[in-house]
Amino acid sequence: MEKYVEIIKLLVSNRDEMNSIIDGLIEIKSNPSLYEDTFFRMPDDSQDITWLAMVDILIESGYAFEIDWKEDYSTAKNQTEILLKNKSVSIDIEKDQDLYHLEAGSFFPLLNEKIEKSGYQLLNLDIDSDSYVSILVNNENINKLLSLDDRIKEYR
Image 1 (cartoon, rainbow, N blue to C red):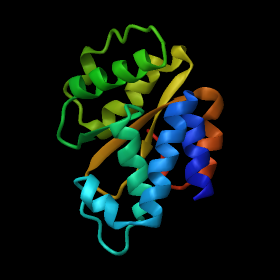
Image 2: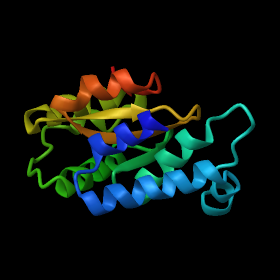
Image 3: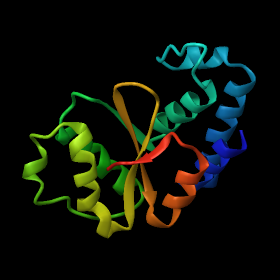
């Protein structure tokens, strides 16, 4: 549980929101049936409910977004702009016409190149599915986040 709390602390700067997210995660960890009552995923016994709950709570709280593998770049761009705005980062993602014809696995690394001057990057939270869950991370926190869990991955 400690690493999940550390991940949340690195992603959520507002203390009240951070505590609310941590409290929700602790509640689900102590009673896993709450996860299935609250979220749409139907995990099997081999999946880490605490990880999935953290991811879903981050999505629900606006600190992450999820897109299906077949969604186009415009969805990812829009969601990235929302995450940037939530961090009070003003940046125009421009000269990106070449990304609209690419699949998600290809456009995410290029999208990161477009936003790198903001001091943030998108990282992937692997949920063992055909969708992409992305978080926006301050460059100073990337290595720390990557060291906390193998399921946190850079888009390459």
